[in-house]
Length: 436
Ligand code: DLL
Image 1 (cartoon, rainbow, N blue to C red):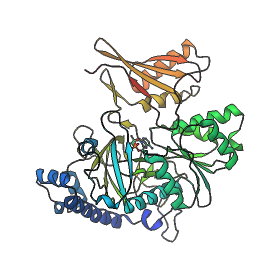
Image 2 (cartoon, protein in one colour):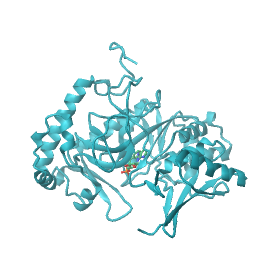
Image 3 (cartoon, helix red, strand yellow):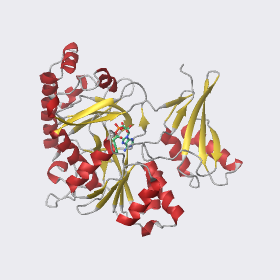
Image 4 (cartoon, rainbow, N blue to C red):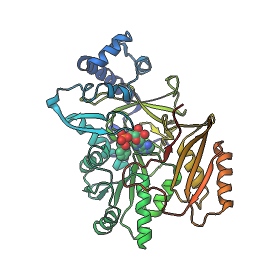
């Protein structure tokens, strides 16, 4: 929908979020050039890599030249653990965060004051897009500590002018009490934890329309459209996505608009997005699914060039209705390393979730177990269903075969038996397969 230039769109920073596209592209090129020059001057391992590839920062003359530059991967951060890729003197750092990772050392990320300012700004934009407005109360159930979720959204909420309840994750009964007592309008947590809280209120007999909550800002793990419906109904809110990763900044790389609920705006004046083919690394056009690659253009302590997020998504083509000029990304279908290849068929857990929730009567709690018999892999899908019947089990197996193209074994269990989120990221898959 074309926007009237006389209207100020209802966004946190109209001058940035609605920058005309030609100006945005020019700004990106300038910022990418500055960032490359900064890395070249201050991060010896990255300079050596460019040298090895026969590249210099001034080889970037247009945005399309970027695809000639090398990717940065998690392995690079590990190889230079803890702070080997930092571009500023140690005395200028103001914070570190870390992610535990499933193998090997944690990944440590560092911020100087400029980076913390950028972090607060992009989170403030995301919270505003999600519906939060100055003066509202904000129940923040993302974990505080080394994880970027708690402190990152906290600073953004203060930048926007919210009153934050820094409850962090876990302690569900206390969370329910605090929501009833302090009457927040906005809640932020993982989508799986939002369902746990909704279940808690249902158990207590509190109806969604009796809650003060109006907006939920959900992220840190993949979720599908039907989970949105579950959270919206269960908590009486409008639920939107917030996406991000510690290596690039934390939450606030992108955020969805509550009025639109159709993809998350990437704050493209700070983070340059590309979608590339998962195997070849070749850039893909807008609209095609592939791996999201991000360059943090304005970070000064830890600028990363073409960081391979491993997250599978696409850039949504076409106009938006909010007046922003920045592109939107779709949901994360999964991580390229979460991909389950079951007897040759690629499956992401979120595809199974979408089928299950589409069947209506199934609760959103599920767990995937992978095993191997001989050389063949098997997938068992555990589901919570009150009074589940053999007929229902067969129907689910049939629908998954029809819609996703894989044969799974379904195991029904009583409500409450499967692991619940404790506020952190919920692991949906247990892999018992020996390495091949
Ligand atoms: O999860 C940052 C964050 C905190 C984002 C709170 C949103 C809300 P990491 O711990 O480094 O950072 O994990 C990053 O989590 O590469 C994705 O695989 C996944 N992820 C994050 N947000 C989403 C989302 C934080 N909205 C990794 N949808 C990313 C799907 C997400 N996956």
